[in-house]
Amino acid sequence: MNPRRLVALALSAGIGLQVLALPIEPRFKAVTVDSNVGVGYGVTTADVDGDGKPDIVLCDAKQVAWYRNPGWEKHVIAENLTTQDHVCVAAADIDGDGRAEIAVGAGWNPGDTTGSGALFYLLPGEDRTARWEPVRLPHLPTMHRIRWVKEAARGWTLWSVPLHGVGNKDAKGEGVRIQRYLPPKDRRGTWAVETVADAWHKTHNFDPRPDFEGTVRSVFVGSAEGAFELMLDPVRERAAIRSVGGPENGGVGEIRLLSEATGTVAAISPMHGNELVVFHPPASGTAGPGRREVVDDSLIDGHALACGDLLGQGRPQIVAGWRAMGRPRTVKVGVALYIEAGGRWIKHRIDDDQMACEDLCLADLDADGRLDIVAAGRSTRNLRIYLNETPR
Image (tube, rainbow, N blue to C red):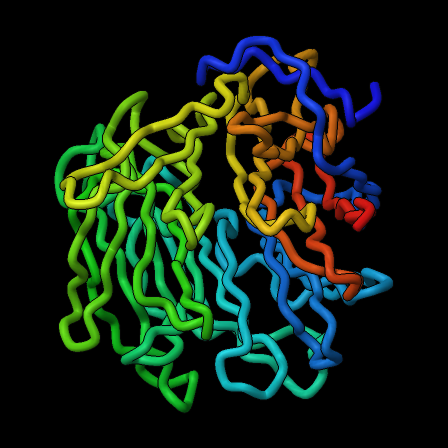
């Protein structure tokens, strides 16, 4: 089918079956980087070796590895940090030397809310292709998502968001402690830990909201109780909380800022859910969350989300991935691009059944000015890049 004459799916946003002409033809070339992935829990990009190119960093079940751009040679830097799986990774240049610092969450056991979890800072040697030294940090049970966050008052901090509160059962009990870690100059030293929020009982993911200079002043959080924005305070540890979306359909799993200009937020609802939604801000002077728009209700175990202007339209699109975990293999998995055109959303498949997407991210891998897609697959056991060849 000619992508310029794509037929929009009948989505639950009330779109109906329509023929919409795309303003631009999306073109992506799939390249398999690794066909022997265990789970592919977390994938991100950062310049690991300081050559000015974004490399791929993968947190796999038993290994942490980076793949050198542009040949994608694999370098394992940590292995079997705990007897249970690694589950999340954060990579960013926090000291300004042009090379990324990496942290890893491990000890993954979502059913153990008292004794599971682990958190490590990986200390590199001179040879960044060799094994890095794991420095064990304080941690909470069910460690699930981590990310480096550049704050106005504290500089670079490491944030962690567990899945459950300590000792929780059936999403009841102590609230999930969202924490920030302050890196000491000597990374083997003591990391100060602050609790930013503990208002929810089951969280899944979060997304920092940077300003134009890259400084984060608020953070979005997806939870079973809804979508929220944490408004950071330069003095107090605790953040003020603003509701973005309620607990409809079981709340939110994945969450990403869609547009800074409009204040819209994209999310997958519920956790591991079927709905791709957009939360629109409330009308001026109105309190509480705004309008909830369902973009697509046909995801099957939706588990990955990113937003960015991949098509050079001057406004962002949404990339979502689903993995169909626990479903028969006849159920298709994949990655799709959602394009807003004429007030409607058009779904364009990037990958049709070759990527059981556990996680994905966006980066300009080949310095051509276009965002590419990096995705890790669970049951498909692959790491793929989708090079953006869309005409400009």
